[in-house]
Length: 104
Length: 397
View (tube, rainbow over the protein chains, first blue to last red):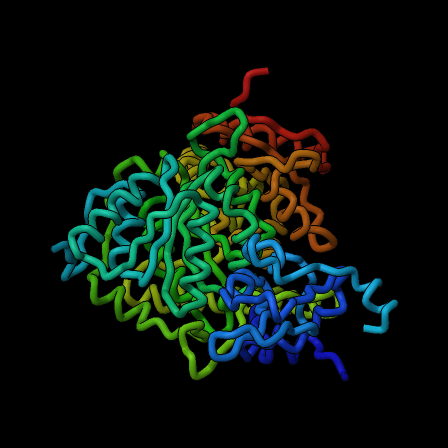
């Protein structure tokens, strides 16, 4: 893809702004992970605390229930596992390297 | 209800005059934090807010960093924003100054020039605005409170011009101008309102039909290209500043350029200065001229973008020039005004130049100090060389 020169940027991106909202979605940060959150569906009580606290909006929710984790954007910060209620402990952070060795 | 229906002269302090300009500008948002000697400016404006004389959303923030952050946010959301600060307040908002300029927010800010700490000093020098000279703001300096008022009104038009879209800092000397009373002609409210016009933002974060992302990240492959348009905008600002001054002259009768040449056309020795010192220097020029000495003053109004061409033209035929800086750039040969003046002359004119520092921390700048500079220029002219040594005016050895 040909990159824009400054002359084109003057009109395309004045003051560095982007003429769209939400294009951060196109930048996939999932490859940055060292640890992957693994959620146990059986244990999860859908309290949605992980969804509230996730800084990448990576917890997927439909009709008030957690349906999965967006692994193309999850950076593996572990906040979801941290805020999951201690009595529930539905999310474990597992090393990516270990998961990849197991073929996952 | 405060209003000015026909132009009239009032006895005002510089802070009052700027507050009056702000009342007439009637900005959408003002976010500010108090600091001497700006404080009374904001007190006056706060009175206008409390009395319902303005429609302004007045955000009382917890620090100057927050003040400029709120200003940038409000500007991005399509508001006309004005604020004011001094010295360490300006220093505290330093990172956001760069952001305001590079995101092209047309914010207008009065900087009531005060010395940067340490030691803590509440009085006038130019270290604060000079410390921010690289941030990308337009800088206009005021010789007196009339100029401060006029510059504030013009600043709105300059900042918001589609060819510019850069924040503008209007500088006025702390205490010397901000706290002393002078006759200042205030234009009619309607005149100012018509002059600045309705604010037409170029972008608006609250416009959900045209969503934008404001202040995103660049990597090394785009940052550089994003910076060049700022350079271009500064270049275009020269013409816009002149154009706005031309229109302002029609409504006020007062003429403004990037510099003011006071008795410089046939002057052999010229002093260069900014701000209130120019008033003192003009009186000295008059006195020395009456005695037959061919001297002149070059006052610089626009410090950023620096008017190299105008400075060069004014100084090229002089036999010697003294540049008076009310701040220093530690580790450099001289203060910022002198550094720029030398650059203006480089390769263009061989004019011996002596750099001076004066008035730091509010040290009184007397006519005698200006006379000393003019006197020393006699030997500079005779030698034909620029002395390496930095001149110091008014300091005890």
